[in-house]
Length: 417
Image 1: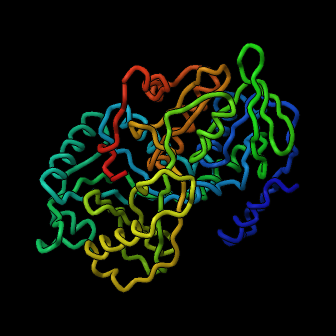
Image 2: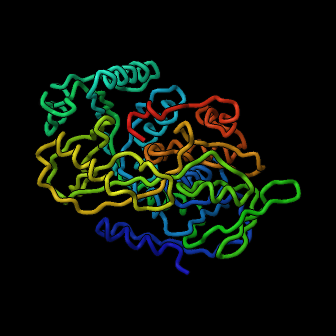
Image 3: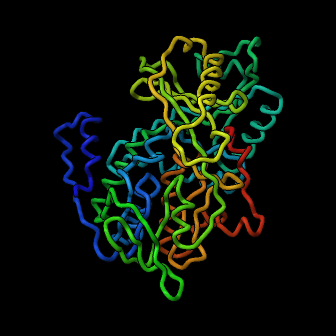
C-alpha cells in the first residue's frame, strides 16, 4: 500500500518544479515503536517532528486513518494570532507565533506565513471596553496589540465600511500586526517531509481500533486496521474525534464536538490587505494567495460529528460581510465546507499527561487549533518525551476541571463560539 499517495498532489499544487523531487518512504507498520502519534494533522506531524529533532526519539509512527492533512488541518481558515486575554493563553499562542515566524526556514519548506495583521472590530461600547482590555493585557504580557480609531482602521483596511449608518457601526478596532495567515496544507506537508527525513514513519489509511493496556494499567499497544503496534507512549491528537479514541483506553474527557463552517469566494486580484474579525456581526475574512476571499464564523450551535452544518450560519455570515465590505456584494461563492472541532467547557485546550501511564492527549482547541500548531506541537513533544509538562502547557491539564482552575477564554478569544 502506498503510504504517501496524497502527496502526489503537492507537486501539482506547487507546479512540480524540477528542483524538488521528494522520494517518500512507504513503510508497512513495524511491530513496535518508541512512540505512536494518533492523528496525521498539523499538531500530530509537528509533535513527531519535534520529538525527533529536539528529543532524539526517532522510532515513531504517525497513524492517520485517512490521508495526511485531510482533517481539520486542511479545513481551517488559516488565521494566526496571539492576542488572547489570559496569561496562560497569551503565553501559549505567542510561543506559536514566534515559531511561525521562522517555520519555513526551519522546515526548509514554504508554509506561506504572512504577518499581514489581524484587526478585530468593535461595534458597541462593550466591544470597545473588552478590546481595550485585551490591548492592555497583551502589552503587559509582551504581546503586540494596539487600538485604532475608525479612521485608522479604514486606512489599514481600505475596503472597510465605517459609515455611521451601519446596523453595527465601527467604533474602533484592536490590531495585532504580527498576526496573519499561513497556508494550512503546506504546514502539514512541511512537517511531514521534515519528520520523514528524520526517520519517522508516517502511515496513512491506518485507523486505530483499540488501545491495549497492560496489567499495570499502562499502555502497551494499539490495534489498527493494519495490525497490532506495540508502544509504551501514545499521543492522541485527533481533532473532532478525541472522545472516541480516548474511550478506547477507558478514559472520558470533558469535550463536546461541533461543526465549524467556512467558505471561499471566486478568486480575484489582490484587494484585501489583512484579516478582519468581528464578534458582534459574527464573521471574519481574509484573502488567500490564490485570490479567494476566505470567510468564516463561529461553531454551529448543535453538537455533532457531521461535517455539514446549518445553512443559516454561512447565510448570516455573508450578510455581515456584505454590510462591512459593500464592494464584495456581487462576488460569487466558490465553495463551502465544514470541519469538526473539540471544545472544552472553558474553550481552552488540554495538552497533558492522562491518568493512564504512557497516554498523552492534545485536544479541546475549539476554533483556536491552527494558529497554535507549532507551539502546541512543540510543548506536546516536550511532555511526551520527558513525561512532564513544559512550563507553557503546564496550566492546560485535565485536572483543572476537577480543581476549578479554568482558563475561560470563551469570551476572551475575541471571536464568537
